[in-house]
Image (tube, rainbow, N blue to C red; front, top):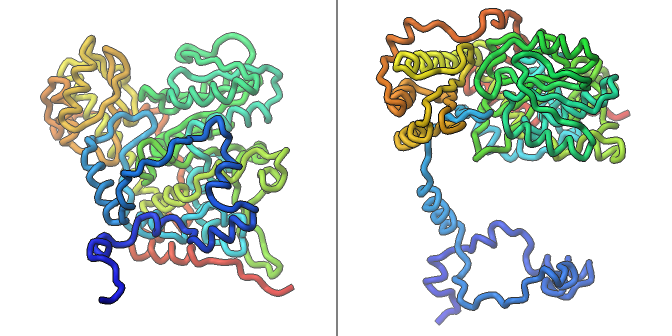
Length: 503
């Protein structure tokens, strides 16, 4: 008999741990010898405090290590137990379609994974060009000329804007006013950031103007968390009269149809790029954005990609203003490399390149029209719709019935936002269909004809806030509409390096 493994061992294959934990026994021995430990147990005993160490022996009845195939099958079985609903909760999270060409060539492509290579411009010209494209998208849509190369998410971008306004402002007040119609997770993060910095956070209903007293900054929402679209220009002007600076949290997709905050006087604009093709991912992560006017460029946190010239006069991209970065001057830093969402910023940039300005406006108009028709059907059925001017979110009042309606919608496979016992929020998006509207109407006990309502329902955008300025005019947003063209552009960027010449 030859010395061979048993059939049962051959059937099981290679254990999952061997595929996904790199160091092999010989390599472990080398590392342990280098740090002066005789074994992993000895290392753990030296490193883990005794007060928290688990001294119970491992169970002797543990099953054999599973193979990768077995682990994946078990995970699929667990995932199949989830109830997958259509997302209509809103709150800054929207259904979106990640184009397959972007999913395959960016999200699933190891050439785009790492966020660290932009610090090596010699080999990262393509990644830097993708980030410069992201910055261009944000700057064009928000109406402010300087945008960073992404932040962690919308809430932390708002917190960064708050501290930026404090650094850049000339008012001695420690008071920061936040519109009550702001996303709740944003308010929570602002509170957390404000407390240790000695900032007095005031959350106020601004429908009738600013609260009395001094303030160094103001955060408005456009559209608001409730879905309402209000003109922020009067509040911005009032804040400026008191010497305060103003940030606006804006839905980037809505800005394809609405006047950008920069044109309304905002000093900074923040938000999320999630609905630009970034999957929901159970709430995150999604690349946040922050844009400012030129006079505040040096206060901008995070990465900023700029254009330079190399020794031969060729254009070369690099990270600008690096003295602000933690890897250069830790004590002066306004950010570190972990504040960025480079991969997801690249996805959002590619989404804008693939669809172009016309495609983005069409997606935005689809979401808006779905919401307008949804609201018209609810009104026709006797349901109170709270706001008349909206972008994609409808707030409806059904006294005492909110839970009942939400449960009925959930049974039909749709998730709504239950605000309180009387009120629901319903958000439309790129993935909303007429069938979804009909299911929502049914949950409210309403019967409506979407086609008939569409013909007789006006848009619900404020007439005075319709966007008239151009955006995404650079050729890159008009040249790659086919999968083949975008795939070749992405391959060129993934391979791009700086053309170094010996000096």
